[in-house]
Amino acid sequence: MAWIKTIPLEEADDKLKELLMNQRRMYPAEYAASTAEQTGTEESIVSSHTLIPEALYHAFSTFGALLSEELPLQ
Image (cartoon, rainbow, N blue to C red; front, side, top):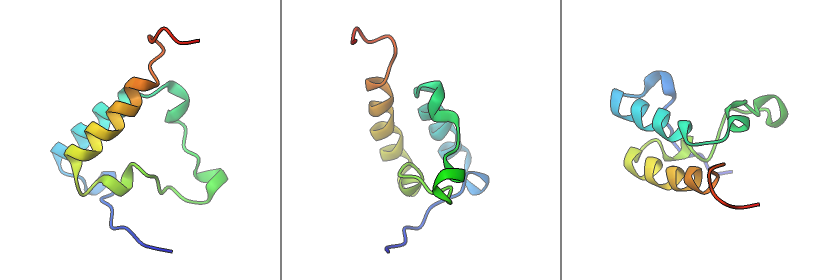
């Protein structure tokens, strides 16, 4: 399996922390719960983007906007 360098939240600079928190606010509440117990790891696709904070924010904020409960989708 490939290994991707990531920056853990506790080691993130202020800019990365801000972008991560802003991106997370856009997601539905059920995404806040960790799945580490089921998967055996805290790894995530989001954390694999921590080396490029701007790309992380824009890519995953787009996904968050698409999940918005305010959209007129059934």
